[in-house]
Figure 1 (spheres, helix red, strand yellow):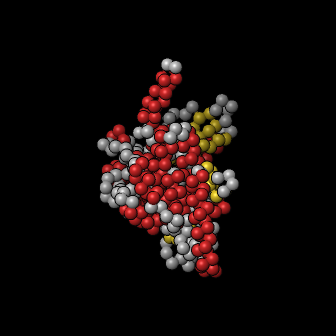
Figure 2: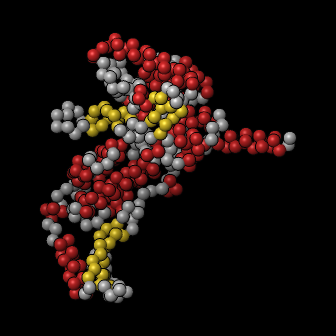
Figure 3: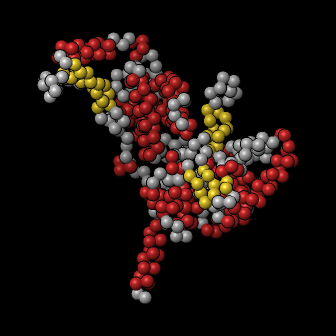
Length: 400
């Protein structure tokens, strides 16, 4: 074996089979571990030539190419060239949001070749303390990890295109909860009295019926607005959750706005695509609601945009999630309830289900969580109380 060389020089060794191999480090993977490029040949001279040729080519990169982009310019090019056509819509939307809202404001002006590990770590720490758009604190470690994944992929593509010599995101450390004073945010849940009051004001409008449906299924807002009538099986009493209504980036040359409202043909995660059984109460309300919608369709005639949406505007078009949230807040106010996020309906459904004795695994599947552990971690406030009830039942049974 040859004498060990420094980083970037490469090393040459002979294998047990008699072949010669040269290896040189070319960067780091997402976990921060070194990545290598390997050459092999029957002779040491040949493998040495291959290694030297590779190093010469790397060195021959012209300064004009290497220094062409700022981080902002590269991120925009990466989105347009490498992301748009190669990932699912939900991933693309997530990356666009991260690039626009976090990466460009903090590191966008830095030259791509000058971006250092310390720049990235400083950004992570700032985002953890004061990264929220509303100015009310910092982002979660989970959100910062999502930002890390996005940045690593963008810089890895730059590395593969030989615009940079290493990927600094590979070795930049993400701060942990242990090193901060950040506490896990409590989830919002409607009390049983608030829940009943809200259901009383849920009329047969798309907004009232949508809120009623969310309370009885735990679906996310985008999923709710993406339900089509073809997804509802009145005989089997099920709803198929497989798409979302969202604001999508409009890349068409004649686009009048950067985004447009439309159907995203996937859900948040793979496990979010699911079939939910619905209660007789919800089924009956949906049948009544459909009869009202059919009357409205006849009233509009050919002007109605029949997209087969369950929850649609009066003219049949998609409902903007932002506007739906506004209508939701109005109904909360009408019911005499303080402001809550729409996601509180999802948390309320899950809490009521667990209180009713539905197994955690079943609740997890209904919600579309990636694992039962996520459900247990999110609703741990309910589980100890339920465990006490079960232990008392066991004690009563054993004493019989």
